[in-house]
Image (tube, rainbow, N blue to C red; front, side, top):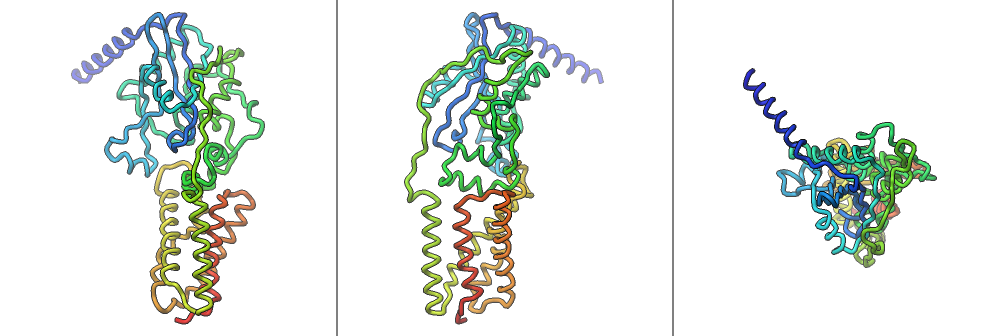
Length: 389
């Protein structure tokens, strides 16, 4: 018991020493929010947000960045797939932080917060406390808890009811999926993957605060926010001025090209099968195997992970998990007697999905419609084609 009391006393003394050594910001200091432009790579496609603390008199100019992760941590990629994403608060000199964006030619905007000296010191101490090794890690969520959502969360945490995050800057709220697609080309593999993996939960309207999972909307909200009835921002300036980057791709590398190619190939093979009254077993096997495997993965993301955007994924109605099992039956010379009932079931499920799409229960990518047409052609051939066994 005495040993525990002694250790507790030592810990309290260490904390007291740490905070007593923290320099007090002067009246010339500023605390600001940095918003960084999007880029063409997926990890930077949505922009970035960080805090800056500057005091020329004390020689302090550092950036607190909640968007840092360490891929070398044990089981990082496994945990990432499971939705257990651990990100960290990092601290860098401002010039080092800015150098990255200069190299990538991405604009950086700075919004200086309207705070008293005491409030600046309180916020500075908060960042330093958060930066301690035992505090710097947090559970990252791309939709609800990231470097961008931290801005409003921290300001509300520190200043409470004094902060008024108005929503008048949003005339018509978007769904989460619409917000994500504002930064992605619909005909890109990134958009294809996100639309496959994200379920109906991202097709609800996001609140004004929920819009701030994207850095640009966090920046817009700060422009419209107030503290104690006064504008939250003193001023805004451009630190780096570069044009917005637009992703450029070649059509043969896009998902649309390959899906159309698959559709045309399926039409051609099915026509030949119909004319010659044969059946290409390998085409059926591959279509059923791939869509079944996709369905298994989507079900796993739905029920087996902590990802907030993957539940209620109706894509399993066209990427039907049982296709994975049926695929192996289609390699045989004789089709199983229960296959027609199964095919009517999967055709019905795709029809149901189209109805749910029309009523906006879950929004589908146009690319998925082409895949459903491809599957539908083969399903109908297996149902109505006169195949010689």
